[in-house]
Length: 173
Image 1 (cartoon, rainbow, N blue to C red):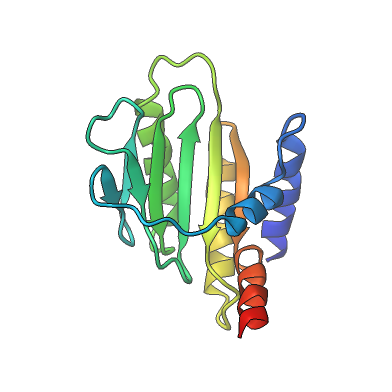
Image 2 (cartoon, helix red, strand yellow):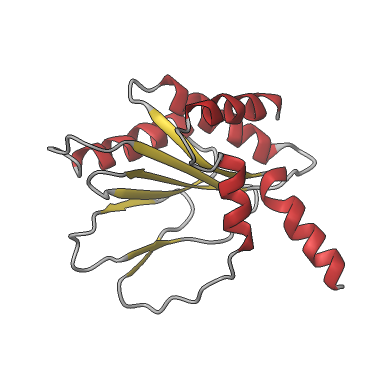
């Protein structure tokens, strides 16, 4: 977990101006109520799948997934084109997945001069076998190896995702 904390801390330094830190973004995400989404415009991503779309897509307006217990949901978005990719990673081939989703967003943003690649990591918990922490580290290393500048915007994984949820559960039960 130390590597994940280090990566989040160094990424916080990249966040410009008044933008929230990745951990502040995670807190904001956790505070939002769950939303039910109907089937129209929804593309559901299962474990070991990914999909990418743009705002111009007439069929897909929502990418979604769930049940990321030891898995992580990874969203990569180009702020200029709006191209967005979601993957449900389980650690089976993390390096390859990171390259694939980065290429997907790049292909959907061919002539965009402005904008940046923003990364959102969500899911996992502190399990006894440390599977979630290992996956967090694999993902951070894989994104770090890329040539592109990737800006970590939301870091809501392992302890960062579950501490407040557990506290809310205990308060209400």
